[in-house]
Image 1 (cartoon, protein in one colour):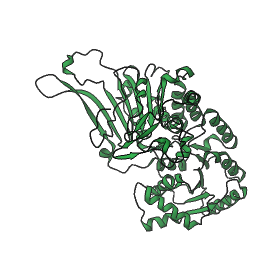
Image 2 (cartoon, helix red, strand yellow):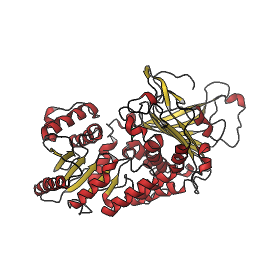
Image 3 (cartoon, helix red, strand yellow):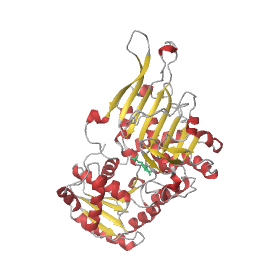
Image 4 (cartoon, rainbow, N blue to C red):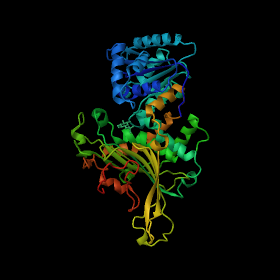
Length: 509
Ligand code: BG6
């Protein structure tokens, strides 16, 4: 979606000494630089409490780029050209004078260019700092230009409905909504955006994309990693807050939304809000039927033995936090009435794979004898988001031979094979969009709040009823057995991923 931006731009990153800046933001900015996608006049200012000078900051960033960039290690000449645009400001976010220094630095940069500069302030900080920094920026008169001055806010945006509402109220009290860019990095993934292209740039799928033809939809975001070094944060969050409320609901809205009239930010966002509003609220007494939680025990990922969640660093040894969540949602509108959407996500699952499966209704009458179709299955359309970006249509075909026997076969489109070009990281796309001032891929206040409202009954119920049997799935499995009880029909099960097959054949799970 993004195109090269020519307006001068200064990107100021708060939390510049932190992990997100190191692993994601700066490697993404650097790739934009190498691709020639940054404006000719661009500067990056890092702000944090850690004491560093410009050179130390640049060296720290370079390590991150070397380690985490999709392009691998930096080349010195290229890096030096980029690093010359990078400065560091050590500042306590509570100190108003520090924001005065930032304002001076920005105005010095502005004077270097004849055209007005875009100012992007990126909050890669703890969520507790969001309001404080926004307030300081306003007081330092750095947010007065509603067209050119923007604030990027990372997830988690609140930790429940009421805290998200409070945060929205304070931010919208300080800034105009159009200045606030709430990030959900899944929206920057190529394949997530391709859902829109697939649905709305082709005429063959749209007529069957509804309750008449689709039986149910499954959305899986499985991770093989555990909580890594984020045990402290994760133990206060869990899978619903960390993944379901944001990434999975976002993906679901793109699968379920009505065609937008245009790709203007509010037009697309209105359509996704319509989906969220149509999700049937889960009554407290229904939570146990509509949602399943899990926590990983010790196990094996590939050949590596891994510890249980409760044995991870910074995690409470008696933690009741869920590392897996599965939920069944119903969408009460004309298109989707009666079509369940099953969403599941978990850490330490068998392998990393994100997929959407639309399972079509069975044929109305099976004219073939049962003996012809031992492996009969309904048609499915699978959209692989990661690690393999692919679209697979599964249908029945006749097995070659003189007797009539049917087998499911796959028709496969692979991004990598079709385009054979490097795929930008989600953060590259999103940073470019925010520099261009296009908010289509970012969350509006109401989108975030309604998404919290969808999961709030689950959060409440689970907080009131501690889990009896955690851990309830082994690391390296597909999650707790209880998740199968969510599916409506006995013959339905969570699909084995087809876009990211295991490197070695797996025993049936
Ligand atoms: C983040 C979550 O938002 O998304 C992490 O906080 C999770 O817990 C990550 O690992 C997954 O992102 P991706 O792009 O690797 O699927």
